[in-house]
Length: 389
Image 1 (cartoon, one colour):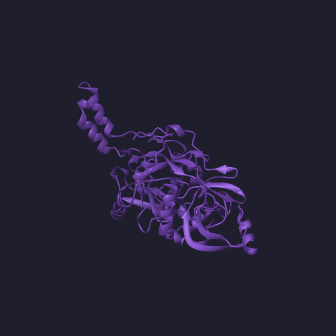
Image 2 (tube, rainbow, N blue to C red):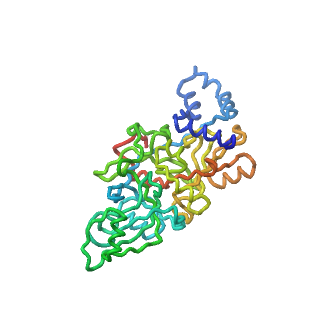
Image 3 (cartoon, rainbow, N blue to C red):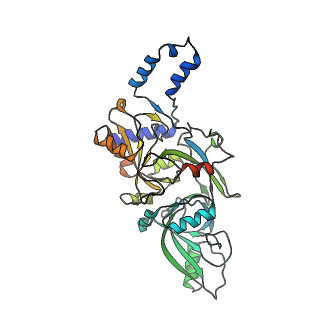
């Protein structure tokens, strides 16, 4: 491992393990006005400004950085047990629209998910007839072939359509083995589609994503470490998660949640599932770039510096929720300034002002579905968090 990788790992550990206390630089000028004519700050505003300009520790703290958001929970079966998951993205446009209508929550159309390597896919089975239920077609809930912690687990589900034959007596099936046996006995048929959906697991047999201990006090200074989930309500079928603010490729505000990642160190620190299969997405269109800052202007990003920038956003043909993470370091922190777009990054890199390095030795992928601000605030939790709006 290089010295730079060691430094980055150390920085990540420090950032994830403790919250970075951030102070808005503009507050200094505001305080000068509030304190009155005897204030040293008011008497010497030029000195304050000069010090801020010379100090590389400038601050960019976005408002409404962390927002508690309610996302519909969906139920399925895995190896005979209940599993609860969410639907955030899918490779088929009609399926995305149908899922949005059914759940009342925006499900992103992400066509590049169809290019997910076969070995990085899970297999899910959705019933198109049979016993009435809460499944996507109005019949029994789907069945999936793995859960977090299993060797073959992936949140990227390849959808198989299951139909009972006309002369069959439908019954509820709760495992892939039961479905396979029923197919072999001639009572149902399976049609494998090319549709890939992002369905991160939230709760499963003897496990769940980490639930934060500070669920009732989410604010702009809440750190990434300690979990991404605020509450799991399987009675009302809602999971409340933290939506983090960042920037899309054009500088437009986006929000994202975090559900799983690889390798295990950042996954464990963020309190999400470790999914080794996601490493297979690297170098494919399924894992576009997401850039996070490891130096420069202090701020609300996951590393304690400015917010990150994604290479694509929902609505783009190259959008995917599976992000290949790279770190941006200012070669001279005193020259740091706010970057908002992918073109900003390219310009600073060409000018030799920043160094862009693939994170975690080029093996860091994070499942971070993006949402626009309208979606986030439409579904902002009214029960949890103390987010000021």
